[in-house]
Image (cartoon, rainbow, N blue to C red):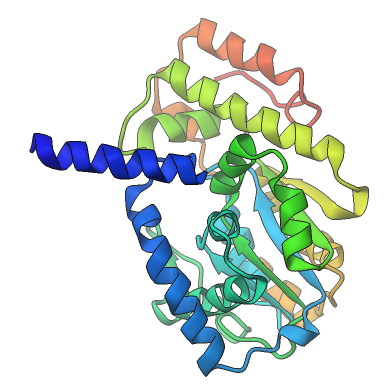
Length: 298
């Protein structure tokens, strides 16, 4: 067992040296195969790259409703948003623009073909355009929490993304109550962090996202709260679709909004919160414009 552990550590060290800050061995080992696969996809299929006008990506925190929002945007006839591709990983690995596009389109078809189920939820919207498109004007990837981790490791990665994609960039920042995000991190990850570790990890992401928010142009950034999206789904979807500069068709907006849950899950109530920890999160949140108005009572 010690030999395998040592080999794994060596591979992970090589992965870190290549620039992959996440210790995700399976994904790192898959990069060479995906490089070949994306080349094959490009050579055997005719994609509509010439019509693409904008590239969209999610910035945020794990378990913030990104899968729901990404799936609903993907249901628009002119938008393709892949699920959990982690496009920035392949950008950092040196994949071409066309390779990343082909992987996004392929990933979207595969996820749709499997029924669009994720973590026990069904994200399929009948009768709309998930897994296909009428005209491909916006393309992107939903990997909110992972994208923030890439941003922490490589603060200049958005500038590299602009240069690689040769398109206007659209960044969607979904914010959820900090106590819910932290509690879910504490409960759901395979390697369970302490509560303090979960808090610190959350605020590292917050800091990276706040810095990016201050650096990008106004037309590149759209910010919504998870709670707002659930409370006002039609209005929130319209805001996002207009941000992406495509048509907010009434039939699409109504059908997609019907898929939204009735209320957010209060994950904060599923763990014990010492008062001093709540006070710490409340105090640290005051530094950030997009967090300071939350109520921190448990």
